[in-house]
Length: 302
Image 1 (tube, rainbow, N blue to C red):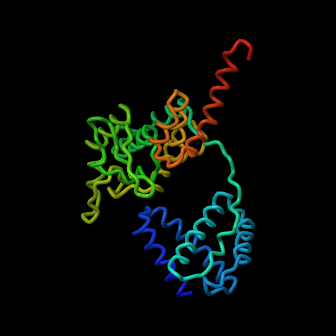
Image 2 (spheres, helix red, strand yellow):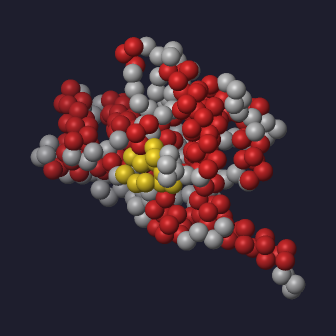
């Protein structure tokens, strides 16, 4: 399997240098491809050039038997298709056995979002007298105030912020950058955190961990996506809310609330950093539900 591993190494270099993909995206590609390598070992397949369409169908069947979500299966097959496309380009294989594999239809789920009353409960439970509480409040306000992804939040540097006009430079997927504005609530929370809480937390860092990232953990090191999820879970436990919460729910909430208040879809698309308008259109279903409730409650002949 040595040649197999070398092929993956070359693919990773291609994703880093030519495609300029984020480390988070590359980790997902590697995970998907290494899962297939495990399957190859189980089937005594040692050469990527010998994989046939029948092998890919068997692998797809196994993924279904393991009860992976359709979205996850689609991502794994798509990763392998891209991997083989690269191998074809480099003349390391002759065929792409995944080119004819049909992806499972996507599940059409409406995005989960928070109501304003639920948000208010979360905003009221950060201890603003403590450094961690100031950080948590700034984190909440930035997630809701900008609609950025958790990976984008964790990459924000102090130099990316313009507190005079209330904007942040966001480093999005595929190395794309965009400026996103934020309001007075987020600005006040971030200014308090930078001037007080962050300084205190940074005093605990190791000398080798000097960095300019905005959000830091309890030891002054970079805050990770896992750390953000842990903070949100801790905050939920302090409230009367019984729901599960994720960083992405704030992104859904940001988009839904903007559309409900009359924002145009193109503007919301630009703020979210969506490459395609279809990615933004999913939020119109939520907005339609909102409009229907208004109609049913207020129209004389509803």
